[in-house]
Length: 91
Image (cartoon, rainbow, N blue to C red):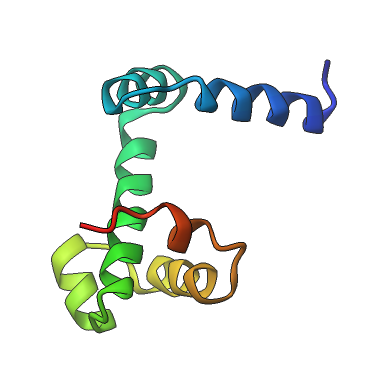
C-alpha cells in the first residue's frame, strides 16, 4: 500500500466524500495541524484576492502571506492546473 498513487487516490476519494463545509472542517481537522489549515486558508484567500485584481502589496497586507508564498500562489493561479480558478468561491 506504500505506492504514492494509491495513497493519493484514497486521499482524493476521502475528500470527495465531504458534503458540507462542516464535513470539510472535520476532515481537515483530522488530517492536518491547525498551522497547516491556516496556511492553506491563507493561500486560498490570496488566490481569491488575485482573482479580484488586488496587488501583491494589498494581498500581503490583508492576509499576512509571505511574498515568496504569494509568488508561488500567483504562479499556480496563472499557470497551474486550473484548480484555483475552478473552485474558488465566486462571492
